[in-house]
Image 1 (cartoon, one colour):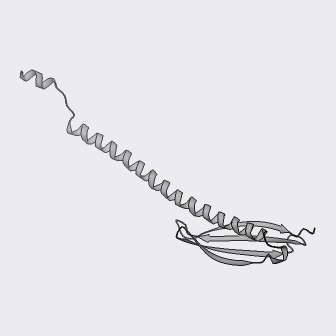
Image 2 (cartoon, one colour):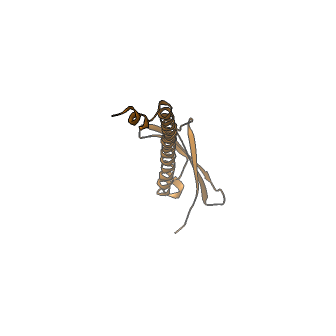
Image 3 (cartoon, rainbow, N blue to C red):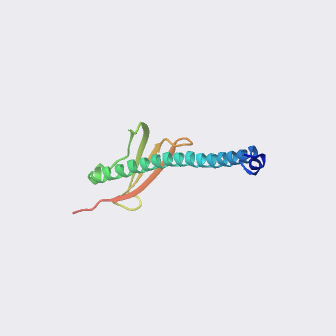
Length: 128
């Protein structure tokens, strides 16, 4: 092999390698930030879905009661290791006679502190 043949062969230089590694690091950092954000949003969605499901279950439970037995109440429930506080407020004769306005408020864990969700309903007394 002559010395001229070795000069014509090209490999990657240190500068090219550093540029390639830097581009890879930037891409990896962007993807990791996206994954962290995705995990946070999933946690928030889970807490919100659980809170709303608890409030809906409370309204359905009240619906099974006789109209005179529907009253305000509160409870604490643990779901998936997280504690949720459920407060149900019943206001009689609002918005009209023989109607009850029901507000179910659920407070639970969130990413930035406790989150509160509220569902409202109106039940009426139907005479048969």
